[in-house]
Amino acid sequence: MHVYSFPPIENQKARLLILGSMPGAASLRAGQYYAHPHNAFWPIMGALVGADPALSYRARAVALKAAGIALWDVLASCEREGSLDADIHHDSVVVNDFPGFFAVHPHLTAVFFNGGMAQTCFHRHVMPLLGDMPLRFARLPSTSPANASWSRERKLEAWRKALAERGIITANRKALP
Image 1 (cartoon, one colour):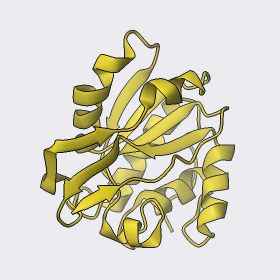
Image 2 (cartoon, one colour):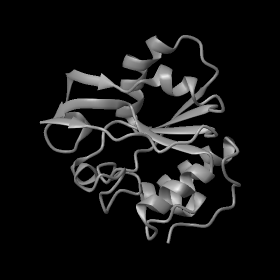
Image 3 (cartoon, rainbow, N blue to C red):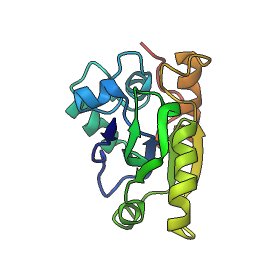
Image 4 (cartoon, rainbow, N blue to C red):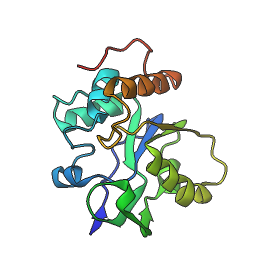
């Protein structure tokens, strides 16, 4: 099945870009990033920047933007059966317009990858288009329920540390609800 990503959640003042690979089936049905009820992204963002899952999707997007965070996917479209990154047909991959995105987001200093597939696709398909950009890159543990080897608390701590190191949050934000 051919699937398409969403427009970014962003504003021109964003300092950090968080990238997934491609929304899963639950997210595509809902028209929202990280809509699967067991995905830890919104609980983690709730604990760290106030984008609590109990808020409306629009309010969560506003909280991300207020924290200086943009959210997008590496892939604009691809062929994939189901929701797993492992099911992406690599010869069908179309990446988003990152040169254009970075051109209109001059305050970005870092890109965080929500899991390994986002990082792999970005480095394979996007890095050759960018040239020398003064960005820092970091792979964080996937918030997907498929990443069951990491507990939510362990994921939260890894994300907390990374956001604190980039100055997005202070290191002492609350724990997961």
